[in-house]
Structure formats: structure tokens, C-alpha cells
Amino acid sequence: MSVVEVDIKNLSDVSREIEITATQTELQPHFDKAYRDYQPKLEIKGFRKGKAPLDLVKKMYGEVIEQESLEEIASELYRQTAKERTLQPIGDPVLVDMKYDRNDRFWFKIQYDIRPTIKLQTYSGFEVEKPIHTVKDEELEDEILRLRRINSTTEPAERADGDEYIVTGDAQELDNTGFPIIGKKTESARFYLADQSLEQPIRDALKNAEPKGEHRVQFSHQHGDHTHDVNLKISVTKVERVVLPEVNDEFVAKITKDKIKTVDEFRSSLRQDLLAYWDDKSRRGLVNNLVAELLRRHEFEVPESLVRSVLSGLVEQIKNDSPNRQLPENFDAEQFVQQNRAYAIYQSKWALLREELIKAENITVEDSDFADIAEEEATKLGIDKERLINYYKSSDQFSDRVVSDKLMKKLIAGVKVKEVEQQTTLE
Image (cartoon, rainbow, N blue to C red):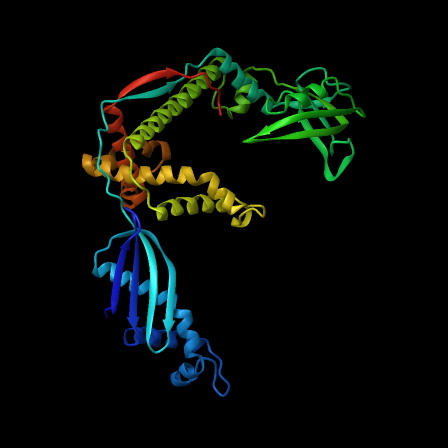
């Protein structure tokens, strides 16, 4: 089957618009299929459900069925035309307009994207910063303190005499005149005075807090790109002292589930964990800086369909992380798109450039790649090496990861890495 007329316009370097017109003769096989598909669903007086003659179905519901099938027909004709003309679209096409004159012809317009032409620039020999971090003794002690707090107990206290106290109270929001705001009261709110994320004005106000005491807190809170005033009255109901466990062999055995027996072994293991954390963070920082520089050196337009796809994936991730896989009630789709659009463009652009670099370097997955990774992972996972190899070979996602890792290794080897000390903290 062929269409009467096809007209393709260039909207941009990566965007096209195609207009397709089909005659009634060419549409009829599609409509006949639609009639047959609808027939089993219809209940017509005098016939059992789905048993009415096809001619009667056409007479009574033909126009409705045709109208409802138009989008599907447009999609099918577009795919057929794309194949015949080797258009090679990427992403999802968008039906932007259509018009149907019954018993005459069907016209529709679809916008689709194509892959941009990317001229590779020099991607080696330049300097890229690698953030590094030297683990200090204070960080080790801070991590031990964090673990002690996680495993702490509490006991009643008459007053909050320091940071290691939890103050429980009813927090009532007030308006600018000092009157309570209806519906803005949090009962039995817990304030851990040693928590660095707790606003400093609240921590200051609750120092020396006692049960039945009242404390007013007023300050401006910076949240993202805006500031709002906080005006609270906290009515204290309970004060507890946090009892931190002593760092001894018993404590170590408990929190490591007997994997480590002594404090010295624990400190050594913890230091290694911190070093591994910062090594990984350092490499990710290098990769991010390298990718940013490569994208800066390559200017090309990013197809909008790819940007939409990335944004859709981010929304789907929020769904998966939410109860019952439903978006939160207050989810603002428009605001979400605005906030994440730059990230989506960045990821789409890197995906396209990455493919060009892989082709330029002729990077592929070899059997030896699967064997090397399986050799390393088999003991760790407790799975037979050959089973792992077969699984890796069957996974396109895993193969893609291997290719990406090989590309990044090659790219890093081709640039000048400048180490820059970073004074950062654990995330």
C-alpha cells in the first residue's frame, strides 16, 4: 500500500515535519480491520453481543469507529513511510494535526526528530581537574560519633544542658502578629540538639529547655532560591539526655554483627571504607568534569524527543519510589520540567556524543570482558562464573555499561589529570 502524497519539511537541524495524505481506497483496509476489531465488543438489539453482522456494524457505528481509529492509522502510515524513505527518526513522533473527509481522503501532520550531525573535535590532550580528598583523623572520629548516636539510648532529664539532648514539644506556627495559625501545629515534635541539620536558632532557643517551658523562635529560612520567615512557639513536653555507648570491643562486635572484634580493627576498617568512598567520589568528579569539557567542545542541537524521554524517565523514577507507584498529590509537572530540563538536555547531549566517540574509537564488547568481570564478581556474589558470563552476555544493559566503562577509561587516559584538593564532607 502506498500513500497519495508525502511532503517533508525541515524545521531545524534535528526536527522534521511530514504531511501525509491517503485516499479512501488506501484507508479502507485499515477501516475494515477496525470494524472487525470492534464487532465483538458491540451489543445490538436482536443479536447476541459481538454477533451482529459486519454490514450492520458499519451502518450503525462506521463513522464513529473510523474517527477513533484515525490516530492508529496515522501512526501506521507514518511508520510505513519512514521505512520506505529510510527517514531514520529517533525518539517518539508527535501527531500535531489531522483532517478526515469521509469517503474522500485523510490528511495528517507529524513532527519527528533525527539524529544530529556531530563533527568530532579534539577529545584528548587537554587538562581536566580531578577533585581529591585526604581523609583526616577528625573525619574518622566524626563517623564513629555518628555510629554511636545511631546506637544510643535516652534517659529522662530535667534540663537540656548541652547538645546531646532531645527536646520534645508541640510546635505551633504563628503569624506576624504572634497569633497561632490554624492547622499549623505539629504535636510531639522531636528536636535533637546535636543534629547539625537543625536550624541554629532552634538549637539556641532550646538550650536549657525544661519540661512545661515555652520558647519562641523567629528567623529567616533559606530554601533553594527563596527565603521565608519562621515564627514558632515550642511548648516543651519532655527532655531526654542521649546516652552514647562507649567505644569498646563489645560495641564494635555489636554494630558489625561480630565481623570485627576489636576497636583497632574497627578503626582500620572504617578508615579503609572512608578512603574507598572518597576514591569513588573523586573518580566520579573526574568523569563529570571530563564529560562537561567534552560537551563544551561539541556544539550541536539536541532533539526535543530525547529531552522528553529523559524527563519521562525521571517522572517514572519518582513513581517507582512512591507508595503504590503513584505520583505525589502535590506533584507539579510543569515546575518539575522547568527544574530538570537543563539536566535532561545535558544527559541527552552526552548520550549522542558518547555514541559518536564509541564509533570513533571502535569500542566493542569482547568475550574476555565478560570473563574478567565474572572472575571478579563470582566469589563476591557466590554464583558460578559460567552462569554469570551467560547472564552478562544476555543483558544489553550490561553490555552497554561495559562499553561505556571502556570508553571512559580510554578518554581519561588521553587527558592531563590535575588533582585538586577538596575540603568536603560526607554526603
